[in-house]
Each structure stands twice: as C-alpha cells, then as structure tokens.
Image (cartoon, rainbow, N blue to C red; front, side, top):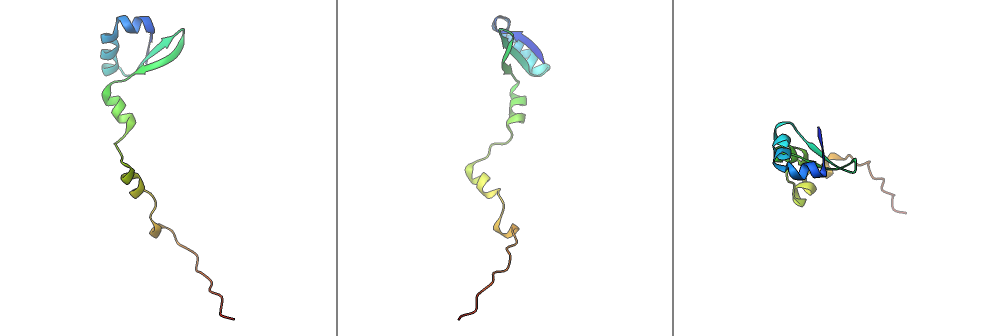
Length: 78
C-alpha cells in the first residue's frame, strides 16, 4: 500500500486513482497520520459485500424450526 501526503495526493490525483486500480489501496496521510484510503471501485464493492435489504436480513436469521424446545410439563388439575 503506497502512502501519499495530502499535498502530493492533490497534485497527483489522477495517478493516485490509477495506482489504486492497478496496485491496490492508496493511503493518504496528513501530518504523518493515516487519514484516508483511496480504493478502486472493484475493491470497494468486494469489501462492502452484496446489498441486503431489511427483508433479506430478517429472512436470513434463524428459523423457529431450527430450535428444539424442551417438552412442556403440564400440571395435572387439582
């Protein structure tokens, strides 16, 4: 992963993007501290994973049939 100072990244923005596509993520630093990362859109989509709706999340959870409940004890009438 290449490191770029903010000023360098500004003046060579096209190169930063091109390198992100060819070489991988490019780190941007400000005052020596990692501040941002430039990724190719392919890498971003891979990391982000597939789009999931609320319905997908709810339906993807455990099913009630997946659990085995203990038998209920019924008290005899008194």
